[in-house]
Image 1 (cartoon, rainbow, N blue to C red):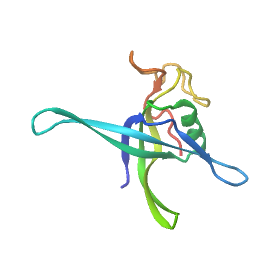
Image 2: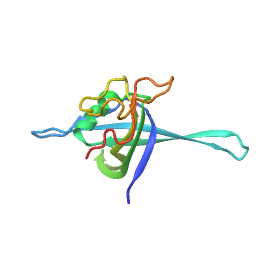
Image 3: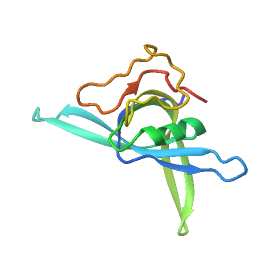
Image 4: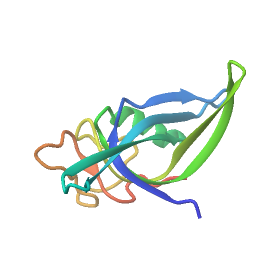
Length: 145
């Protein structure tokens, strides 16, 4: 079983690329920071941050993420680990990514719903506290693929 659930904040604006061919498809990538707090041996609180490379290969969802997420946005999702390799300057490079399968929650740049969002008012209420900019939608709002 290959299931990953992550929640964190974007380290940079998402980057979008398009496949080659007659019907190009969008793919978006971004870095996601996850943090955890723990007490060290002296009982002092410490914070550890891990960085993850995230990719979404579902065309419509990738375009929506590019449009509505930015550096610092909160993003939670369910996905799977993927590994790939490529050649650069005669050396083989390896990359581990987490591929988005379902968006669980996300914070938008603005309160506007993304195009194609068919939820009715009250179905998935905007969340967010006084410190949040924009809005967010809860579990399953953008499940695709």
